[in-house]
Image (cartoon, rainbow, N blue to C red):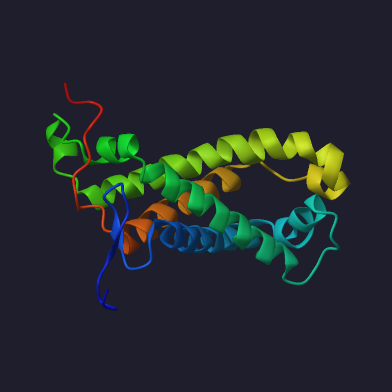
Length: 183
């Protein structure tokens, strides 16, 4: 196998790196983007609240490192979901509406990333973090502003960047998957 050959998964995604690495890199870049939004509006989230969830001291780059690691794991999850035959088939389905049928597959992956970012916002900061805050993180973690508009916008941006980077790194055009929507 030459260095220039590409690796194909069983789900029709081609990449020199494979979807797990593409997902992890896309997630880390998306998390860095979300981190910048958080840093602009409330730097204490990265410096104090995130390390507090793990019982770590505030300060330094610990919060950033944890946040980027979380993004990489979420990117792996996104890559796993998007490369499954059913989801990939939906992304590749030619919709009957004229506007959607003219969108490219890469734009649909970006849309899937956007939806994933919104789902992450709805699950993690709104449900999971408040539940764990009292048990693990104490006062600093309990003050995490999960419902803030900045959090919603940041997670939406995370999803857009995640989807865009994943779509650039992974070739979603190869080997069409069967659409579960076709009769």
